Image 1 (cartoon, rainbow, N blue to C red):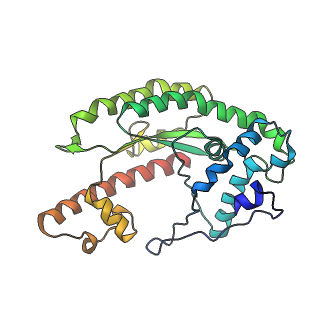
Image 2 (tube, one colour):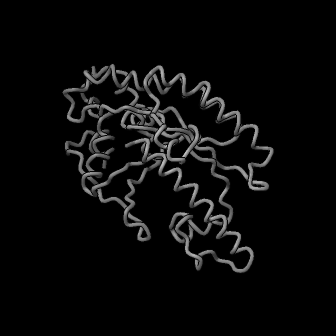
Image 3 (cartoon, rainbow, N blue to C red):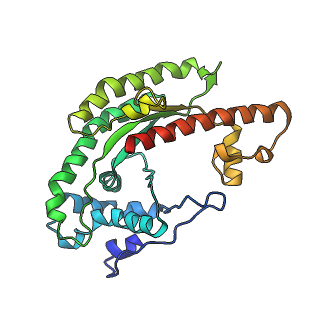
Length: 273
């Protein structure tokens, strides 16, 4: 494992692991996380801030990308998604500098706006650190990856609908988040060349702004998805667990979400081409 080989000093090269693949989705491969990984955040933070002066730590930042790279080669993976926890830890910084692009999930609440305001300052610093520090890690066994870290857009999620529109309690915050992204966040990141060109996705009608999708609460579909181990849009009629009008309503909502996720996926793919 990564922690044994790098953090504990065990002299074994990083190798691809056997990734878990759900039986219902053989094209998906998962590298599992673990709560214990947070224990190594101080050592990683020291490595990120020592300018490689401590040679025993020089391989830590690049090791995350190396594990992902090896697993991608092993399973011929085309796209890697990294689900980061909400925080500004050294581990998240390391994952961020290993990425080509990033999407920010938000909820329609004041905390998301506070987080966006912080990220517009921190993310450019992380990118600049990567550019400035690359020479210090050139001789490491696992050098720093040279990536672009382009902002693709945000997703607004976890709100209820009323008459097929976000309920009034959420609508104002949704508009506030969208305005902040378009008027403050994107212009700030553009000065650091950290914004992806979404014009191709726009021209094909997949999105009309950096708000890539507004995803309402899934309701009972989420529970059924967990029970059967498949995405919501892949649930079969027989897996809905109900009948009659309730089942019909769930199928209608599933169809709406299917379209929403397809547009989201196409937006990302067009932007990354």
